[in-house]
Length: 243
Image (cartoon, rainbow, N blue to C red; front, side, top):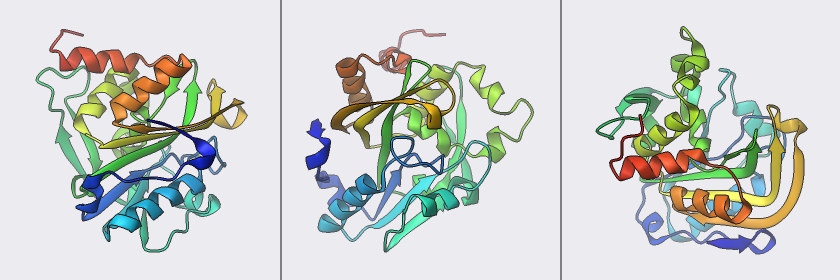
């Protein structure tokens, strides 16, 4: 679904009313405001919508690929919501979860924060960012849930994972972490090469909401953004050989 960004009010689906814990995964990898990171305004709207239908615990979780704490970023960006637990991936207990695909594209198992497994409803919330011509949308947003201790601080680091093919890794992560909802904050579009704080911003004025695959697909088709991982997901779902 597509909404006008200025009029957007989060309407939680019925499943949220039955949840005991709702986990929100924003993009707060930088201490820079929207559109580099998910805006406080949107997260506040999501929290308010949840509170209207549920007394569930609400967890906001993100991590930094360089191993630094994201908690200072939460504070800088004004993520000071009452009765909301702010968590850093690096401070969580991690568990290894098998990729459910019979034939994984690149990664047979991922280390992830245990709090994800104990949450009943999972929401990925990201600004509309295009890095090097490729969309960094609600599914790629899940990459920063991988703990740096397990991926950055080992032989080969993140490069060893990326050499497997970033789109294949993202597709595998999609199946391993079945998030329920993706929200793409497309009030503006940010295009950049490597550093999002130095990117080019264009006004779009929309909010996209839906199943993570469908919402990424809708943004990709509506705005002409390249998302190779979506094709890999389709192929994996249909049982086609993609290796």
